[in-house]
Image (cartoon, rainbow, N blue to C red):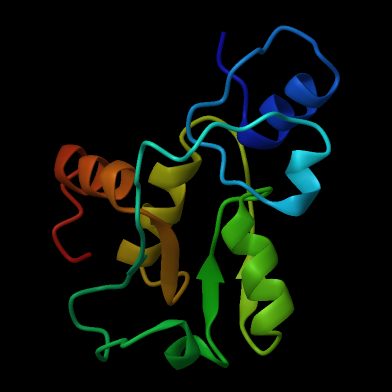
Length: 131
């Protein structure tokens, strides 16, 4: 069974169906509902933009911009808390990462912040050659 991330978090919290989330980031809030091992899988977050977009050194360069981030991911909360001048657009569901990167490629948003492994796979397999 596949669930959108937010739904998977709810299921593990409610002790329904899901017993393990191998890529869940450790937060104080999540510690109330889950037990964690030491992190053993490192999937770095990266900022995806179009190839013709000005160089981005870090999240602070996205102030005043519109970005896509996965709903219920830790990065969404971090952006909301630390960069209120960044406009967040969130969606969830099947193929969400593909939708985010498609929107970057088509110029509908300025950037997407997501993990390097998933994003690289999508860029190659969907031929988003301008991201």
